[in-house]
Image 1 (cartoon, rainbow, N blue to C red):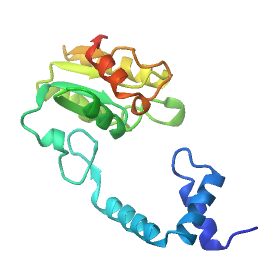
Image 2 (image 1 turned 135 degrees about the vertical axis):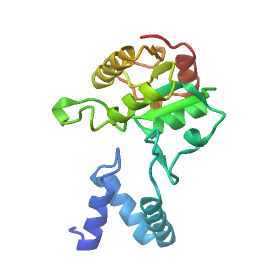
Image 3 (image 1 turned 45 degrees about the vertical axis):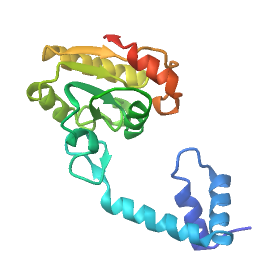
Image 4 (image 1 turned 90 degrees about the vertical axis):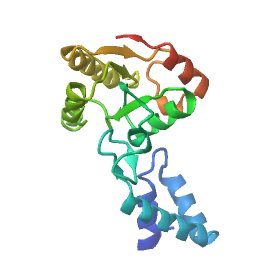
Length: 198
């Protein structure tokens, strides 16, 4: 059965979510419209509210409703340690699973020349400025262990070395090819505590 324009549009819109294919998107759409219109309304309002209020932190590039996120605005955090991650999900994962008290820098991606993602798209100019001016003593590389993540880690290591900054890499208790946000807390905590010079 072919759906009407609005139903088809909603199914297509839901397919932008990771792991949501056409059948799942159709099930979600029909559930929201047929059984739970209040939830659909709340979802719509919450999404609109988040799109209006949430942006990138002016210092670390994670998602926040303020100019600075809670980590960057906290004067008790150790400013000599800077942990590099690929996405805000990894900031949440590390904060939840470890006792890390330093700051973060979120790349919002990884180097991938074939996809047109270079240093400028990852904000590496801003990172270089922080390495020069902010008293960073240790750069902790917590990029994923994918080919692109490893290439990004090597690029960042070279950048830190030019500024005389110690570079460490979280330990490889994380499975190769894995994504940090899906690793259990214990494994992530051990990997983070066991980081080594890179």
